[in-house]
Length: 364
Ligand SMILES: [Mn+2]
Image (cartoon, rainbow, N blue to C red; front, side):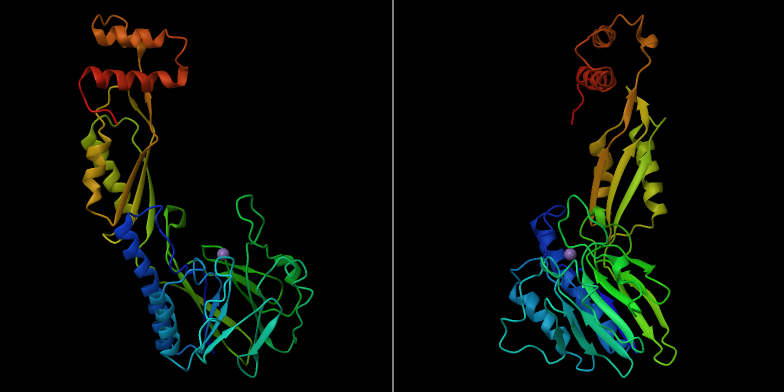
């Protein structure tokens, strides 16, 4: 039996952090389109079930287009049953308000709910609330002779910035679980649970920012019901990638040289026109380096869906070489060097801006 495991689609996400209004709207449509492409993939590979392990929707307010798009995709193939477990972003029962829920859409609640997928395969799911999380493993009852899949939505370990429930993975050891179909972590992770089973986060279907870089997609499980063996494969489906590139510009003192170095680093990542690229310049250049961030940005802006340039490089200055310089520039450099009110680490940058101002160049 083939089963698809996905999570964290975040449909109707605002996406305003990286995109302007028009691009955010476009990207929003892409998220829905990618979900629908995944359902088409499920039909093509003749999957029997699709597990959606939470955060199908990004927020309680779901547009009619999104809701209808999801329902249409689910109803388009009655041979596939969709099992949808709500996450911390979609606590509201979006489908519950409908007069008719698709027959092939199954849901969960705050107590363990189980579905028999075949003679051998059982699916269990629990939606977390304030009370059921800590005791979740203890309240799960499984049959060791079944192939047991468990769906949950939560983080793997507590973090200061995320108050979402924590799945105590250890507590699920030795409970006859073959596969934990999890959601919430936005990157793919497949790890052993105990001698018998494993747990997996498929990650989100599409990255939404540079903190969600790399490949994104879903997992296809192929379960041999005789041997109980579960083969799994990660399928990359995202229509765009977010790519982070770090370029050390030490020793490069011309804008053209820096552009060449940036282009080479982007090429290494095989970025295409569809991708979003974020470049961070690092290293150390001479205080008088001819480096124009605006020209660098403009060179790449039209080549990618989104281009961001961050200059975190520092400047070095050889004070000796200016010691005998009697020009205004030399005077200025010596004044900054000897000014106790300018912190030592800021002197080189201060001198650079001063020199550029003296040269009448644009200062960003
Ligand atoms: Mn979540």
